Image 1 (cartoon, helix red, strand yellow):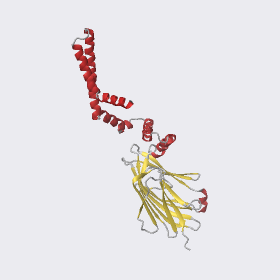
Image 2: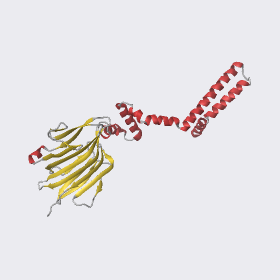
Image 3: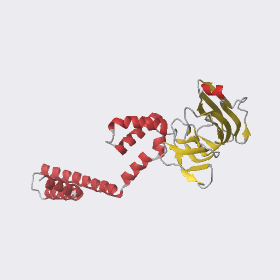
Image 4: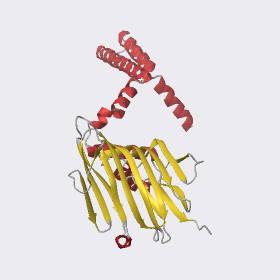
Length: 320
């Protein structure tokens, strides 16, 4: 019975326009054949015109709905960047959260707010003033001593791309060191630091400041756009020596969004190196696999998010 009622309702809704026009015509005819008193005939005539106008309006509305004009206009407004950009930052974030809820709807309600906050704070560029591009890292391991000290030179070349709305920013990188290492020949020496081809003295410069608090060494680089240039070509080379006794691996995590990464690791005969991904959705791909004592990896046509990256684990091969 319920199904039949729904079918009847659907038929009435589908043919509403013609039903209204037919009803208005019947009322108009009834008003002209003088079946009722004059006042009633006049009322029927007015009602017939009202229903007729309603039918015409419904027909136009249905036509517009059929052609998709309303749908297209509303989608253009809601999904257009102008609508989003004209909202305040808090409204933009609420809009993003509402959209996220619509995507996964009833899934994981207990985790939804935590997921939204984590993605918003860590994996959307809301607080980043720059990103890295064409990141090329070369790590040349010269030795791992019998005491399990690793010695290597690391060269990194990359573009720092500034936010289009900013003319300057501060690039921050951090390094965690063990205080005890300094007493055992710990080395962290900057061999070269260039920005846009200009070499910078890291020990005496207004552009670069190196701060040490506890076991954390923070490097702050001031980037100032000149002549509208928002890209800073960075070339950095460091020499490092430290102990692997506490942990026999090296991690490289990106501090900001990074598009296009290439990694080259060279090591001596008595050292074995394993490469691994850190939290990446798309893994690094092997390159030049036929070259001895070398690991080559690339991460192209994709982006690494903050805290993602790569790592290396080390093992000394006993020649005996």
